[in-house]
Length: 115
Length: 115
Image (cartoon, rainbow over all chains, first blue to last red; front, top):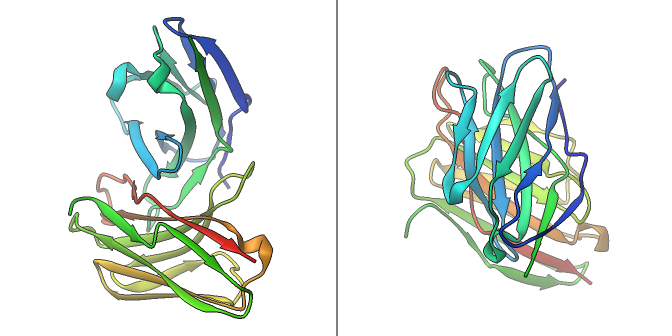
């Protein structure tokens, strides 16, 4: 079975500083990888996804993530954060080739950007 | 309307009430999902419908009853809930085809409070 670990439940950072949100997964098969963002009182919005090809994936709002197969990681990065990036971020994995889209989510990382 | 919509956005109900949550997707997808999001816990997959047929039920109590009348609509019928059922209920949809782009798109959620 797959599992997703987001080691940091909260990450405080000052505005314009770089940030990295960590995600590690365990799986016995190839996977698809996703990052979602949840703003207060809203649903989850897709930030970026890795399906195949280049291991560096660029998403919306200046975020990017790098798939590292040997380390089974998919860390999310942004070189300079804004106050508006304050939100909760979820990493998710989905099996390749399964019969339906079963996603496994991490427990989330709350990013708190301070002025 | 675009994307995935959910109504109501907020719901307060007593333990003896019966209510229903509604989800509608305008993306032409053929799979829909119900998730439960509780504080400090990963998203919990409750139900999956693919081509209007239930394909997954993750041991959800019978006080939750899903209904998928067509590929665009999904309901979650609630009765005799418990206070611990208070949570954010998220609906998602995807195009469930073998080898297809497996991305789930989420609605804004219904915030449920059971008194």
